[in-house]
Length: 189
Image (tube, rainbow, N blue to C red):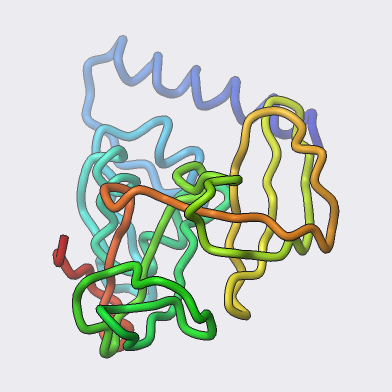
């Protein structure tokens, strides 16, 4: 409920203030990514008892080391798109479009955060709107791109409806590449 969310927010502020006031180091265990990201100086992200990443919160968000870290941190989570070999480089699997990477795509996935995807670019990839969530300050537009789901975070209300055709794009600087088999980050760019 909203009351629970408000109380959790206030408790995070209180715990962090107490930790700073006492000048102590603290280990705080949580399953809540908002708690981890907002309270920690450093996060150790675990999956099935294995460390996925050990880094400051901003590094985990901006440079996730694994597919698990990329999908776990962020709301909505990072988009992960399967790639296929195309003429001139890697293309989004299921989409006849221009290459999104100039490298061979064998066994790679492309990641892009919803807030890094732009709607309406004239040179963008064509997608179909599958859902729109208006959240007040922003909206999340769920699109289908080559049979894969792509979430787009935009400011305010969009005016888009289910079934609308849109063009989506993102900058090369916002792209993350992962090995599909191991889940580990690949620095190709």
